[in-house]
Length: 312
Image 1 (tube, rainbow, N blue to C red):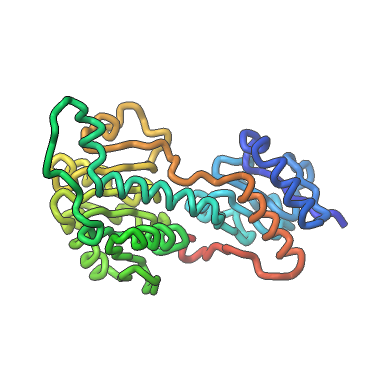
Image 2: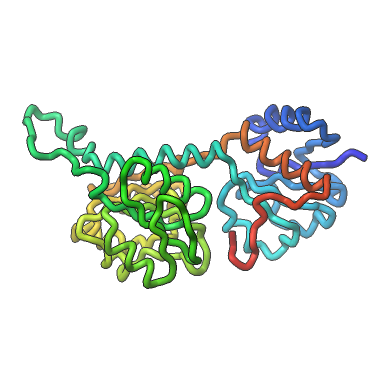
């Protein structure tokens, strides 16, 4: 009997995903019917979804065996009370590589002081402004999941001392790992550059508040490609105004697009990027989705299953 997968991630994404999903289905040999509308919800076996997609009430799909999210983050879905089906987040090596490139680029930008040369092409020869060795520039990696581990290990490979922090104890080769509130203070008090790659949960919202920003060495830099609400916006703006935080590069925000009147746009110590740190590549993400469907049909455990209690 044909299995049905409902692409409910929205009409805008369908043209990008359609050829890659069809290719992945052909390569696995599945008898899988892709649909973009579901006139009979009870016949839907799998739901391919993204925030802002076509579904708000998952209870209409009682026979769906899994909801397969196209984003790494699931905070906009996992709290939906109608969602009782297993939920899988996107873990894609190509997405991870994109995040590694973005994070590494911005950490090196801060470390090397590149902005001062780009912005000061004024004929003045400035000596004595070379960067210190990377080994003297501690970097804090807040979040040691798939993305945080990969970014932290890439930075460690470049010679940066990387201090990792997570809500639960971890061991990651090349990273000095910490956990708990005491561990967070230890990490932040040493960090000259802070990267946030935590999931958004009740426990991580406003993690970087005024008190914790106060632990940073004066002039520390912040790079946030994780989730906007990880940072208390008012506290960060105050720390930027005093110079406690030297600069912040922010890719994610509480409201997106970031409103034109938001103070981040005009602040001289803030760089805004439009949620571009690590887009999901349709070609490789399609392979991940179809592989998970194939596993489910073969009676194997789903990959990247979300823990509802933890929220990711």
